Length: 287
Length: 214
Image (cartoon, rainbow over all chains, first blue to last red; front, side):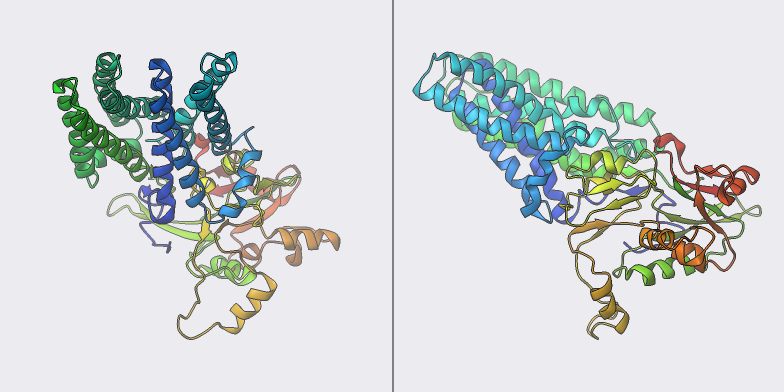
């Protein structure tokens, strides 16, 4: 980036590394991780093997996009060695161990259901799934230079987003497979959509009380350059329409619920991108 | 021992000599700056003053970049210098995002200073003497090679030119002081105490090693 007098680091500077070019693929990785963990956890609760399997596939996707966004992917193995301080290192381990544990659990559940080892691996994979869903919130929340990110709500927001996406997918799967507990999953999916909307708006609202860069990030999302993506994709497509569809869908509406799930996922992906794009550093020079 | 700088802003004239000296010393690629001159304004007409800040990596005592680096490529030496091992960096750019001072650069594309005209002699020499790896993060390293070489010869960094950072020795007004912050009798500590030097943005809890004197 060129040095621009009177502007660069004099005014608030946008964080570009993870919102432009190949770096933006990390938003896709965070999205896959959130959905992987969320879907696996809700599927574990409702004992839906298909949901767990799809969650496992999303975890593979997260691993793939995590590696692809690196400029030196052949060195990716080095990321495993600093879990003592780096959240990316911790997340890498969560994902790797989750993929392994969930694969064993899925195999046991399919071929040896009821085996004590199956229960053990369900517990292990469940704990790791929570780590996979929440770690990206900590990655972003650790950055104290970007006040919009540096919030205790960020990990909560990412986990809730993951659980919302997961419950939407599980609802579609349950309807498609005519699972017995699809009505309960429908209640959960509705609840998660409402809760997700509340958490988003609380974070934006609190940001307006926070430091000027955080306030400006919130304003950018609500009525600035990201407003279109926020209101149309995140809110309308990602929350409002799916809420209507989920509320009105009957027991045989698997196609409608699949469309609803796809919309929720689109909104989920938009959330990660909007959060990363809205990050702004405080001016370096004193005002 | 903890190497640090004190920069007197009243002496800094914004000539950019430090920026160019750093570029020349390390053959820094185009569009990447290890140090910069930031120019801003303070106040309203008719009481306006110009702010000129010479900024670079603050070589923090509590560096966020070292904490977040997932591979250990970003490390802090015992003398406080924070550097990047290019052979370990995977290019995740978390250190760039985490640095509250935005002092890191990512070397993404190999470029020439004069596109279409081939490499200059300086660039050709740089490819041999100081090759930069593409796809990794780089930043100011307080000219650690000069410091290490100077100490090996018994020279004193901050006093002897051959052991001091390039930006410090090129400064025409002597605005940049360099020395050991842990030595209470060092020139840099005298300057900081007498002229009331302050760190940048202490709210980030990084304990920077560069002090600014208004």
